[in-house]
Length: 83
Image: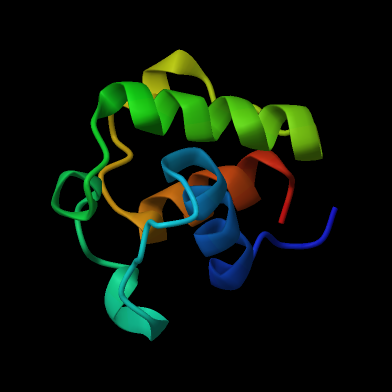
């Protein structure tokens, strides 16, 4: 599979938080903590489930705890996909 991009992640975030959700644009989003973006642990798990359904990529339960930012999310997803 090709690499999941930041742009695709923003679309997934909007799908999970609702169309009214607005995230910062560009690379400033990469290092913001999900909690600062309005995501709690349940929302993050829903986003991971969305990625699993849509792309067939799963992250182990052990790795989920370490996902605090979109940058780490993308790194974990892309590593799990073999990218």
